[in-house]
Length: 92
Length: 152
Image (cartoon, rainbow over all chains, first blue to last red; front, side, top):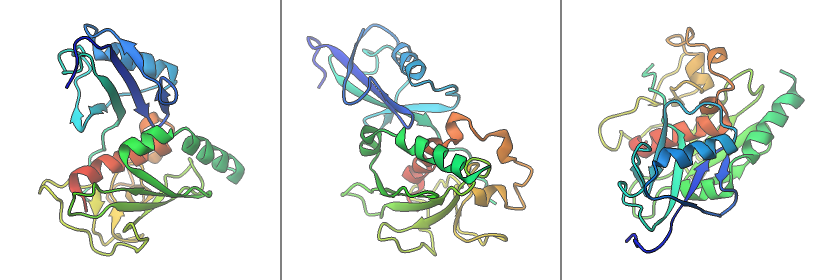
């Protein structure tokens, strides 16, 4: 259960690296859009294009345009899994 | 592409995948000796479906997309896919037969079997190669996401 008194911390996991590096977390502003943190990570990891990528945490899709609080992450330590969604199957 | 260049790219892209990402996604690496990347998507213990293992041949990477063979976690080659778990198939796991390759096969952009299939030869690998969603980690991620839905 998120604790409002605790800091909200996040880490981004991709196949191009983790942000912050290793098993560290970054303290984020709970009132800031999640996309701000994601953009920082994408820049740091030098990922050039994230069109069609999806953000998942705890098995559910996360809307990066929402603030941390709106997604229920206030006071939580969040690991965000970021990567491309599968392309449409060819059904050859 | 020169084999040494392909191998260097292959090794660089595997090395870029953090252990923390692999653990988060339940990816177990069985082999990384060029040109083969052998990775298993581990099934949750509570699940009634087995995991899936991919033997991906990255020969000529990335002039050519990888050729992908589907295996059970034991290493046994899959000959018959299970029906999609939730009914709505992604269309990524194709029982075949494939006219020019093995079956079943991955029928998705980024798989060699897709791009050489007569139905998709106009969908050129050259148009997408090198993009983040079609580097080594991107292709594995896409197949893993489809596997989470279909569990073939």
